[in-house]
Image (tube, rainbow, N blue to C red; front, side):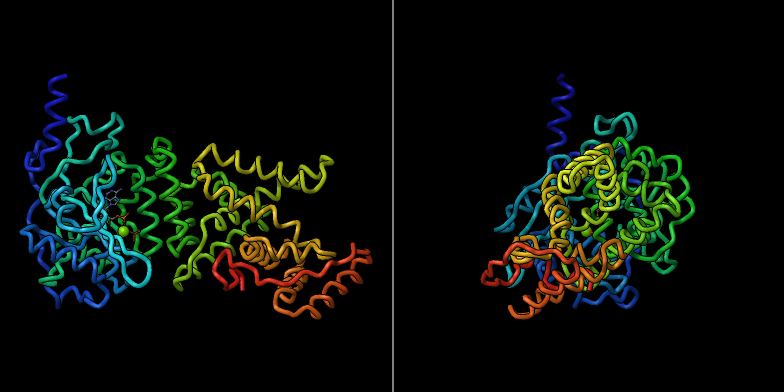
Length: 466
Ligand code: ATP
Ligand code: MG
């Protein structure tokens, strides 16, 4: 009891270190002419944060993925700062600073500019933990992480050598503790330390390995790759929400198709998302499904690489569509009416997912909306089309429908009809409606003309499929 209490107090004290000795060695100092980081690619706010901390007498560096991306000549999507100031000390230096996290306490410093606010994530150098403490579960998984340490220790705790470089904007020097820059040149993704031990500490690192390999096009170093086949099953112990975040990052990386292939090659896709098992394992009978998902992912990658946004609900709706379609057809074959058959299939499809990584509720409702809109695209008579284009998620449903047409799961003429319908005026719309009438020979209920409103863009206005 008392020892527990003392440990808790010690953990709060930034100056006390009770971990293994610092045997992390001195970093290589890489001057400007050797790393060629373009200062124009730096976030001004990240530089402001490092300067403010340095002026207050602390050490502060841009760290992690941002340095990796800068060294690759890519503009980083976000900036992390590492410092020897404690979270409380950081918070006191900035007006808009918020302490977040419990297991891994960090400070979010927010800057409001012209566009979106920018958040710079500031973390305090973390100490290495030994297995004897109460921070580590029996499996080796790290449970708590607020023990401050030296920069060398902080570097050793990071995952890959290329993610463990520190950049000081003031001197334009990179501090490289683990040969990250050399690995960059060799195009190698190498885990710091003993890979098997590092995967046991945090199995999510296996997914990160696959994601970074897809993103950078680097090869996994042999020793980094080898343990994955055996340890992949440890992902089952990772809390579902964390797994979801990581898979979402992977799908939104701009290299999702390559990353999913990487998961397959590493044997990691099992149990993450049943749909991945389904898509990646089955053969010719799932060709249609495979084509659809491949197209959806290629389309997502293209959007992300060109800086457009992608809605996660839309993405998951596409990934689960083949499964849903199968369930829908099965329900119809059992004699259920079309719409109840679809809704029942949606419940089934979503329920199946819960066996692996649960898709968060906020995306679930988007997915349901997009799916339930699909049969409505086939009702091109009466007032139905006018009602459909007025629904708030029309744009997402329409983009989704176009993907179905592109793989010919839905007659491409229907997609074309809708594309024409939203582009034309009232007379044109009347003609299009008449053409359907002639096509089907049906007599639609009298069309009550409504004032046309522009559809609200639920996903960015460019069509996801065009
Ligand atoms: P991205 O471009 O996806 O943001 P990133 O490398 O910045 O890539 P983050 O998840 O933002 O990834 O993490 C920032 C840094 O924190 C990493 O570069 C790495 O140094 C360290 N890190 C993150 N997750 C882990 C982990 N699971 N194990 C060890 N180090 C990690
Ligand atoms: Mg990052």
